[in-house]
Structure formats: C-alpha cells, structure tokens
Length: 454
Image (cartoon, rainbow, N blue to C red; front, side, top):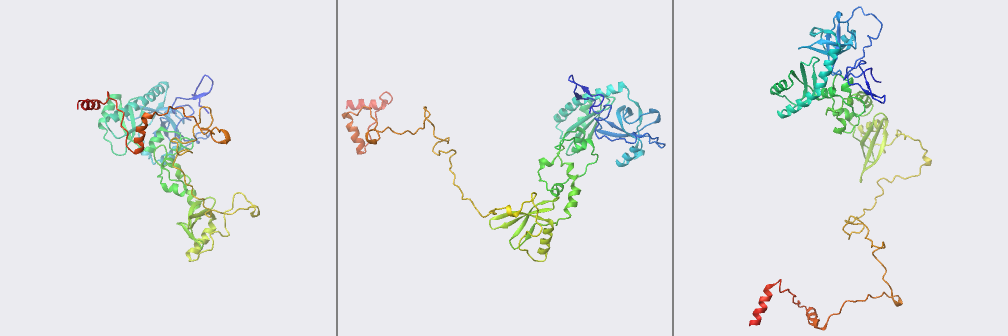
C-alpha cells in the first residue's frame, strides 16, 4: 500500500516515494512503534509532556520535552533544539507510552536538555531535503579521504543536521583510530562541523538496511532494538550445519534469528538422554548419527567388521531402556525393541517381499583403462575416424577367383642390375655409402681432388 506522497509513473503504477522516511503515513520509517493510546478517544488527565522523535528514517531516535504551546502530536514534523542550531524530525511516540520506552532504554527524565520548538514549515522541509541529498556525495568523498590518509576504518553512513551546519559520520573499525587529521581535512572540505561516532557492525547494518536470506527486511532495521550475543552452540542445538557463510548475516556476524527458536529446542532436548554417543548390544556397538527432536526419534548406525552398517531409527523411549540396561552392565540382544519409529506410510508386512542386502553383496572392482576415449590407441579418444565416403575405415578386400584375396599390382619400376652390389652389401650387413651432395659438402669435393693428384 502506497502512502499519500508516493510518486506515480505514467502507466499509473506507484514507484515509491523519495521522502526517505518523511512520508505522511510514516510507513517508510525504520523501527516504527505503534502509538495505540493516541488512537483512543480518551482524555488523559495526567498527560506526559515528553515525546520520542525519529531522525532520518528512524535510524536515530531521541527524547525531547514537548511544551504545551507547541500543540504537536504523533506523526507531526517538528523543529527541535540541537547542540548547534536546530534539527528536524518526526514524532514517533507521545503520551504514556514514552514513559515505558524511556524505562526500557534506561533513559532518565533528568537527562532531558532539549525541547520541541515548533512544527516544521515548508521551508524547513525543503532544507531537510537538501541536506539529505548532500549525504551520498559526502559519503563518497569521506571514504576517499580516509583511504588516502591510510586509516584502518570504514565509514558506513553520514547524517546531516536539519540546518546543514553539522555532519555526523558513523564508522566501524577493529581498534582505536586517530582521526584528528581526518577531522581537519573533513572540516576544510565540507565546511561544516564534524562529529565522528564509532558503531558496531550490527548497528551499521541496522542503519543501512537490506533484505535478509528469508526474503524480508532485516530485523535489526525494522523492529529489533537490543542485540543479544549469538554462539555457534545455538546452531548445534538445532542440528544446523556449521557453515559460516550460511549462518552469517549481512553484518558479517552470526544471524540474530538463531536465538529465536533456541528456547523451544532446549525444552524439547530435556526429554532425550544427554551425552549419549553409543549404545552397546550383543550384536555390536551402535553410534548416534542424528537426532530428530520434534519427532522424538534417534538414528543409530551399527558398527560391523566392514564398517558402519544400516542406520536404524529408534524411539526415545527405547533409547532410555537400552541406556538403563547398559548402566547396569546388561546388553540387549538387539537394539530394536517394542518401540520402533513408525514409517510415514503404513504398509502391511505381508505385501513386503524383499531382503536386506546392505553390506552383504560387494560388486567386483572394474579395471578402467587409462585412455580418455573408447580407443586407447588414438590420442583424442573416441571411435575411429571415417573416410570421406562415410563408410568405416576397415573395408573388405576384393576377392579373386576361388575366393582368395586378390593381390595388388605393383606398378613401381623394378631395380636395375647395377644396384645389385648395393643390395648385396645390405644383405652382408655392411652400411651402404651415402649419396652426398658435392655442393652442400665441400670437404668431399676437396678430398676427391687430392686423390686425383696422387
């Protein structure tokens, strides 16, 4: 559902508003809280004069005193006092709910310093939009400057004050960063008052926002206000594979949703025996493979001479019985007893005609050739190439009379009688003389001239 200030394309479909958290319905804000007391038509004789105001899409919230002459209610854009100048925000909570919110965040009323000045007019809202438009360019420049100075930090977000006199830079770093030189360069470049705030990786993802692996918006940017520590034990109790890439969120830490169902899993695990790895029977030792918590089934694998045997599904009641027998030094004949995991589809035993041959039949090992294709003699492998006519390379030889294969005629010229000496030398085992080229081998020609002179 679009809000009243959402823009509409030429085709009539809503394209979303560019108000960045300042739409009239408030549906674009992050960390929204529903002021249900304000919707009741009841007069409050003891009205609480403190309001909660959200800045920049609800990324930052603070408490301010609401004077009676301001006449501001929930949802109004107001101008509030700031450390230097003024700021513009939206009232997200008012009335008695603010007292409960202050108690939750441990914010005492004596700490209230600033108050609401008045409702924001159109000029205040225009100035706020100009400040929001400057933030992206300032963020890009700030990251370039910090990289040129060689500082080990990452600037995640920039927030300009409503009057454009102050800019707050939120950054993350592993250790302490000396940004005194950085602040001087920022003040010279942007011509505003600079404030640096270090936040954690979870707070950074909450300010930026995004879509999680579940397809919904991140919990930290929509409703989650306090961050609890998350361990890999939460994944182990829920039988989740320890895969760091799948268990990590966009902040690089373990997902907060790992703690949501942990209490349910811990209560269900109380019905199972703890620290149980093996069960001993007369057939052998059974090792625990997997536990289905909600079905109440434990899967064991029997160890045999050839390795692990078939995996058996056993009810947790039978597991308790076998464990008590092992503690007393007794071993049952088989692991399967009166409690066996029922299959999902019930089939009568008479209709089943099969034999369990797991571990009984071994297939012979096949010796594979080292060649890549079917023909190991060919370099590229595969079938032999065909001739141009498309037939196979092997052809039947033409047969003559009597069915004998016909001999091929030799049309080559026969050797002359003068070559008989060379043939005789080959037959006697002597090497025939080489026919050298006089032009290419001048040493032979000189040797012949010397022999003539002699």
